[in-house]
Length: 152
Image (cartoon, rainbow, N blue to C red; front, side, top):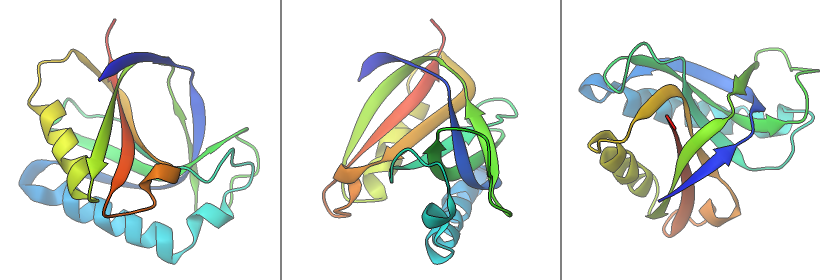
């Protein structure tokens, strides 16, 4: 884990409101991924800066136990030309703890989040995100960056 400063950015994609209670987030986020792939959302996003897929957790009701919104999408250059049916959010700038989940997907990412949830880091609960880049393409041996917003 290392601490990094992230500039704010725009993300265009699809979303679901969920909670970690009773395994609901696992079901909802799996459904969001299925929707993202089956509807070729990546290809619909104009002005995308890369083909990296971001999974952003934001709009927290309280903390890890409350409701929050998950947005699956791509980083874009501008908020212009949002395709119908997609949304645009702003990921705020700030300090983030950066982790790297290594191994089989989605287990490695889930294990990394479990470690974060059980830690005592001083989280902001504004936005956290996973980045599925080039090194995440091999689902059996992936590397996914996980960024957790923290207070200074």
